[in-house]
Image (cartoon, rainbow, N blue to C red):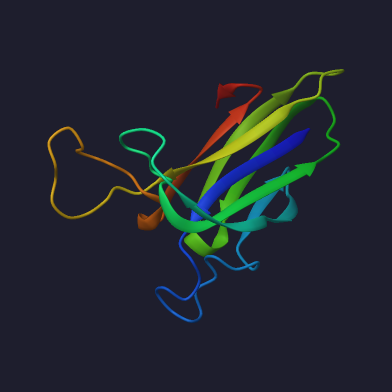
Length: 143
């Protein structure tokens, strides 16, 4: 099974000196059937312009890319994906088919921007507001 996740956080030191966001110490934790796997991300500075009217990843921050190839038996597995620094964990049950390479993609669900609401932009999310949850996609289908 190939696991891939990409997300964006604020730069280090913005909120406190002990904040792990924007540093190599920010990690993604997987627990598959009770076995923990810690993924370290490749990180890079990213200052992106909006790709669409309301782009939650627009702006100056740190992009993380996590990936790992794991050998799992076919069958049903309990998986927990967590961002320990943010206190976020989601649990899913997945079924892997024998003879197929499965792809598990983890996407961030960013928190809603606070402040004044603008017409047509109610509920706008942004990486600068932190990560609220995680979306888990197995072989192109959200689970």
